[in-house]
Every structure is written in structure tokens, then in C-alpha cells.
Image (cartoon, rainbow, N blue to C red):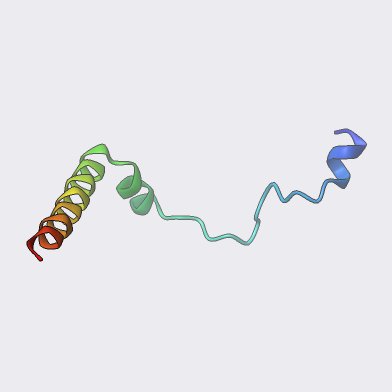
Length: 55
């Protein structure tokens, strides 16, 4: 490492940060679940738009 990298104030690692469990990582990275969340978010937004146009 160079001298500049050793004296840099930028934090590059967090030793005390909590690590997600294997199940949590699987939930976050599963494309099927992500697609389901995407569809639900789209439906939620569409319902807000429809309710806004009713007034």
C-alpha cells in the first residue's frame, strides 16, 4: 500500500457491522421474490393514481 492509501480518511470496512443471515441474503437476491415485490409496488402505485383521479 502506498502512503496515501494508509492515511486516507475514507472508511473501507466496517468490522462491527451486522452481517445479514443466509436466509436474508437469499430473500434479497431471489429474482422470483423480487419480481413479486415489484408487481406489488406497481399495483400500489397504480391504486394511488386511480384514487387520485377519482377526486
